[in-house]
Amino acid sequence: MQPPIHPNPYAPPTVALGFAVNEPQRYDFEAEVLESDVHRATRQIGRFLLAFAFLGFILFSSATLIFYSLRSGPTGSYLILLCVVPLLLFILFLMLKLAWLNIGPGMGRQRVLATPLILGHKHGTITDSEIRVSSGKGTSIHPLESCCYAEVRSDTLVFAFDQRRLMLCVLPRRAFAAGCFERAAKLLVQNAMATKASPAAGVIDQRLLQADQFFQIEMPDGVAFSGPLTTREILASPLRNQANSVKWRLLLLIGFFNLLLLATFSFLYYRLRIELGLVLLATTVYMNYKMWKIYRVSLKWSKSPDQVLMQMRGVIDDQALYVTTPIGASIYRWDIFTEATIQNELMSLALPGKLGHRVILSRRQFASDNDWSKAKELIRAKGHLFPIPRFAAESS
Image (tube, rainbow, N blue to C red):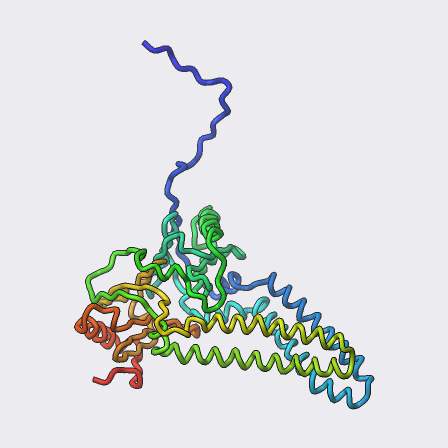
């Protein structure tokens, strides 16, 4: 018979936990996401104050320059009206726009116009392995490690899976049960902190190129497709016109900004102090270098037509379009799309919003001509839900 085991009197006291240490975490949510929630989640008060102070300093300096230069005579006054006043008005416009975006409803409104799917009834779950968000238009499922951005702002949880944060998901506190909002937010924020920072515009997300690491979901029987999406498909789709429009608007903005700065530099150099003109010229050169660098990086992907942008696979059936990538999966109901274009070797389905996102499918992603024809017929059959422009449709 063994002697009784007595407790160690020197052992520290133990505390009973309310949950198991290795217990899986699961947080359900359901709520109607409003535009006010999006505004609270997207406004950048800190950046606004910094930019507002910087522009305010330039505005004050320009006003002071005008005041003192008006005493230089009629010629100086005309030069000021020609050079400095347009720059002053442009800066004032930027300050008012910043205020409208961050203090008023502007930021949230622009985000809603860009991606209307951010609003509406949302329900789903957040676990320590995946995030599932559903609405009346479809479902997105992503592994937890794919969440590269998460933040809590004004009792609102905002997170994203794309590194450029173009497609945000916003969940207010009221969507969670009592005590679950903080735990779910901590889980996402800690995971996002372990990922890399957002890349510059146009940088390819390397996670999307891993063809052997697709996120697995259960898909029905239907027309299957699998393969890469390359620059060639993008440039052959309606996205080409959108990219060209953005490029020219950016170039016009850079040109207008440089014209104002160079005109002001000329006035400062020849009419006032040479040092002020040289400082402004150095600032102009530096800002142009930064803008040109961003511009070149944003177009780098378009230089090679065979550049792989992402790996994708999925299934098309009568109920929905199923798409999986290495970082997640999306189930699109057919009524989510606003337009479809059908060409000989390409199909694209437009998602709502000014951002212009599209799901693009190419002939080489399908196993046979028969599968490609079935896919086109399935999309044509949904013509009562979204328009199929005649100029883009394949003649039959």
